[in-house]
Structure formats: C-alpha cells, structure tokens
Image 1: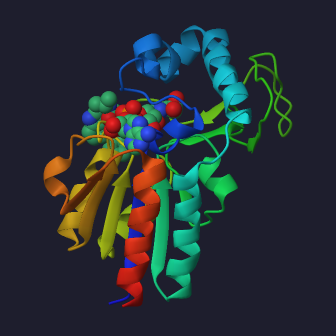
Image 2: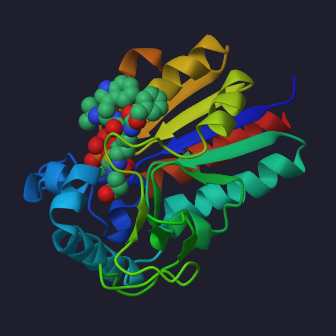
Length: 238
Ligand code: BV8
C-alpha cells in the first residue's frame, strides 16, 4: 500500500508566529464572543463588529511569518511525494502560513482570512485589506453583500469530501496544534484510526481525541514538528 499521510493542523501550529490560539489561557475566545463574531447570526446582527474582528486579524497576519513547523511540513510534503507517497494537509487555520511556507496539497476547511465572499453571487476573491459592509462585489456589483470567506459555527466546512476520501486511505495521520474541540475536524483521528492508519498527536498538551492516537509528542510545534517530520521521512525511506 502506498504510504498516505494526512495531517490536520490547528491554531497551535501558528502560535509561535504570533497568531493567537482559541482555547488556551487568554485565547481568542476568552477575549471575544464567538457567538457574536464567528456565527452567521452574529454577522447578520452586527456586520460591522464582525468585519472589525476579522480586519484586525488580517492586519495581524500581515505581520506574521511562517515558523519552523510550517517550513518542516512544506519540506515533508515535497519529500513524501518524491518517494511516491500520497500527502494531504487539512488545516483549521484561516491564516496563509502553510501556503507561504510552500504546502500545495492543502485544504483550508474553515476558510481563509485573505479571501472575501459575496453573499449574493457566491464569488470568492482575494482580500488583503479591510473589508466592510459598504464594499460592493467585484463580480455582481451588489453592495453590502461581502463577508469574510471563513466557515463560522453552524456552517459547512470546506473540502470535507476530499478530506474524508484521504482519511479512508491513510496509512499515517497526524493532528498538530489542535485541541480536538471543533467538529467535524475533531473526528478525523477516529476516522484515520478506523482506516488502519498509524495516528500521532503533536501539541503542547493532550487534546480531546487522545484515545485515538498511537503516538504523541508534546512541546512547541517549532521544535517537535521538524523532529517528527524527519522521523516520518526516515520511516518512508526505509
Ligand atoms: C458544522 C472560524 C454542520 C474561523 C471556526 C458534531 C458534529 C458536527 C458539528 C458539531 C458537533 N458538535 C458540535 C458541533 C458544532 C460546531 C462545534 O464543533 N462546536 C464545538 C465548539 C463543540 N461545529 C461547527 O459548527 C462546524 N460546522 O458542524 O456544520 C456539519 C455537521 C456535520 C458534518 C459537516 C458539517 C464549523 C466549525 C468551524 C467554526 N469556525 N473558526 C476563525 O475565526 O478562525 S472554529 C475555530 O476553532 C478555529 O477555526 C480553530 O482553528 C478551530 C479549532 O481550534 P484549534 O485550532 O484546535 O485551536 P485551540 O485554541 O482550540 O487549540 C490550540 C491547540 O494548540 C491546543 O491544543 C494547544 O495546546 C496547542 N498549542 C498552543 N500553542 C502551541 C500548541 N501546540 C504546539 N505548539 C505551540 N506553540
């Protein structure tokens, strides 16, 4: 069987790039109300507040750089494919640090901070500056319909069919920097285990899917991910 690696990342992989996690002490959701700022209902009620929340994060992202964990995952993709394996990185993160580091087989299942979507025609476009309800859609021309291209609570994550297809054929799965709190991503470890994959958790501490992991490594992602990536390549080259 071809070695097939599926990786799920969460906010912990970007923490050392200066981007906040969500549920750690003083995490994003300890300062901001996710029901007001990360749900369709919150956006309908106060679009300006939601745009302000994502505009501030977009400005913060412009100052962030990929860290050694992002670099190691990009190198791992290239080397894994070069050895004839299959590779897929599914991220819950809406930052573009995996993209900038060089990963290509990449799904942003919770959307992308640097993209905007028109509620009227569904067109998605790049968005590197502040977005506001006053902006008009560059495709259909309608005003007041632009939103962040981000998956809010209660909305369908993106790329699930491709993600589950890869999980069904996975020989190896790793969850990196995620608390395993948010569904359906939190069910990926179980799905990989059911497919017979060897599963690994890399984080600062055990998340909520702990019992589905064969191996664990705890510590800062910028240190443990490069070590793990090297061990994976040694294994697939053996
Ligand atoms: C949906 C928006 C219908 C963008 C986010 C059962 C089945 C299905 C759904 C549900 C279910 N039960 C409940 C639900 C509803 C809900 C849900 O899961 N709620 C939870 C809170 C209980 N899920 C949904 O609404 C999803 N949609 O269900 O649609 C459906 C149903 C079935 C099948 C398909 C569809 C939509 C979820 C997406 C919501 N959007 N964000 C944004 O503003 O960012 S979620 C938010 O949480 C972020 O996207 C974030 O990425 C995500 C997950 O959090 P983590 O990345 O894990 O971050 P966290 O802070 O929690 O943890 C950080 C980890 O890193 C920690 O472990 C820490 O130890 C570690 N760490 C910290 N520093 C470091 C580190 N590790 C290494 N190094 C470090 N330096």
